[in-house]
Length: 328
Ligand SMILES: O=C(O)CCC(=O)C(=O)O
Ligand SMILES: [Fe+2]
Image (cartoon, rainbow, N blue to C red; front, side, top):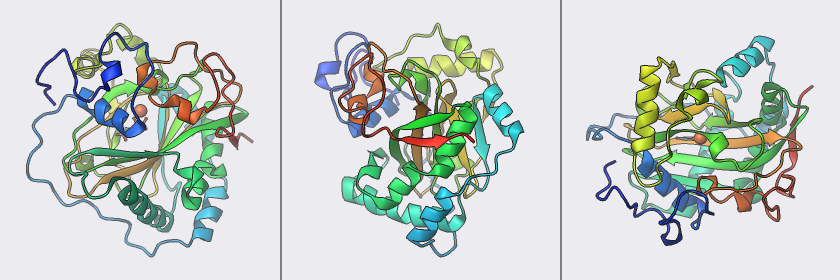
């Protein structure tokens, strides 16, 4: 998206316009996402949006079925743990059944509509901390199945919840800028992982989450300067990955697939060129024992909401950060 003036960004809250990034974010979480997507370079979005895949074509699971499925352990092959350690991401099939995805997608639609109404055309709409007031979303955020996968993939005895999220790219919404989440999480550890849980199949034209392969990719782009007003950082990362022949996994998600990406993983997502919102739940976990960094930045967004009462440098443990997963 071209901004009219390369030195300002209308989406930055007034208090965040001057200076660098070493400052607290002054808006709410939705303001943060509205700003963040302006940092992605986009080709002109074609007018001809194609039909989306729809929701899974099955009857929705009951709430009890959702709870039961999300409590069962997932049978994880050791080679997958090795792949995650090497690649910094993994996409797992069959983490959720189509009926559970359907039930969650229907609830998410209600929650998004209650919060954002109908005035969402072309936007990236978000929700966070749904688990505090919704039983189904709590079953996801505190899921022993998903939290257990997070702990096993990180190789940590226990992981805590950082936050939950809903990420809805409305039809025509553009790309998500290239980034890695260690920049977003104000934690003194890179032992953090996000489960990205699509609420339908996500074909290529819907903008699946896409990953640069390799735990060491960060080193290829660590000299590039973050740009808080325009798309120069996103473009520079994309250019560098082409130059250095970094492999990017941008394949579609089938119903029930869930990806896990490390805080070190560089990722992006394409535009949503379908008529259906591209929706995912994203839940982030971190290693038990982690501390908050001494100087969170504006890229850390509304971190105080996720770690209430914890000050910079403090142990990242509040009532909102229960231990969710333990590795066997
Ligand atoms: O859903 C997206 O487009 C971006 C999500 C993301 O960056 C994340 O979950 O870490
Ligand atoms: Fe991310």
